[in-house]
Image 1 (tube, helix red, strand yellow):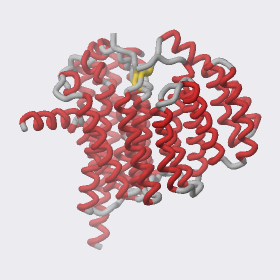
Image 2 (cartoon, each protein chain N blue to C red; image 1 turned 30 degrees about the vertical axis):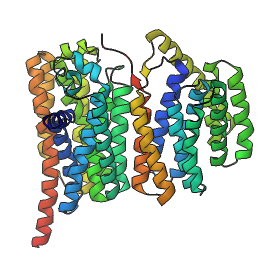
Image 3 (cartoon, one colour; image 1 turned 120 degrees about the vertical axis):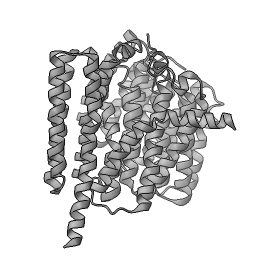
Image 4 (cartoon, one colour; image 1 turned 90 degrees about the horizontal axis):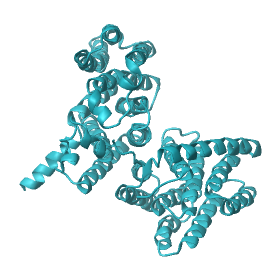
Length: 295
Length: 237
């Protein structure tokens, strides 16, 4: 029994629940931003869907990347490299999780199902297999996968993939270089040991910082376009612009005096920069609904 | 685990693109039929490329699942076709290599003929390309087979353009792969899981008709199987 419990624990670790939680936030945020009601059954479905889809894809990613994980100091103690779970067990768990994800998504609508399968396609085939080990711009493809929970959340609420949903997905897409490249800069030694190219050190500080700022500009543009097209989320757009400007200033400062410590601080600053959009937009939508009701 | 030459990598990428096309049919309702046809043809030709090299039977298995699904969905073929078609590659396992190639060729051609409008004009072209493919080098046959794809929806001129482009692409990819080594290997466990899921999806479609769940399981299986033949080989140094 202890063995089974430890295997389950190891598998849960393989699904990176904390990362899944952040992506779940974007999914809930996009769902509520669509103006959908606070339906407890739908929220339960989204929770199950989010954890199984994101967790399953993440675990499959680790299955294929176990050789990289085993040589990186940060990841060498993960369940597969450390042998706490076998490859067969991991694959079984991944398959079951993805079956659950597809089953739940198909009970919502085909657009949500599309988002789940597109996430799998771009994360595993597009990123892990075709770009991660071959180009320093790998994350440009990988980020598409990260934006799929937001697209799925919107599709669940709106019943279709429409422009505002795509814009919210674009927000997540454009945010990811800030998150990934500065962490990779901090962990440069690890990435080099694993022979994984990253813009952070393959292209030099100036280039990757400029690319990050360009992505942040796209993020700001997407937030404002969302506000203009839906006439909602102006507060979120304003506040996130402040955060994006602050992040851009920090990145610019980083170019002048790059250091691992500053890279880590920028990485930590990335999460609230994204969270603010996906917390404030739905809050504004809910508040506007309440206002309408009170009238 | 196997090594690979340029044409195998291209065929694998062809399969990946076919997966993306199949995926897109879920949301692009207006062009779903065209997309599905193109995906099927691309998958068919890519698989044929692999089959002629007598490799990746499991990939072929998944493709046949895809084809049988299409025959049910698009053409209203008998349910029996969808159930029996996936069994074909299992029978093929027992055969020798030339027979595998011949069977694969016949299956792919028959499926293509079933699926494409104007099949009578397409058939001689595909057959001629396939014969040429068998007679010429492996790399060349993959070029002409992939180029044949372009003739289906657009006609002869785009086909010639596609042939030239694919020639450049394949030679470049082949050269690159020979220089840096083979970038892919097969994880048969993942391919098996994917094929199994795709089978369940197809059988569900055959028995209960079109549903999001069955289609989702089939596409999930297809994507898993495709990911199983594109596992990167480059070991960390």
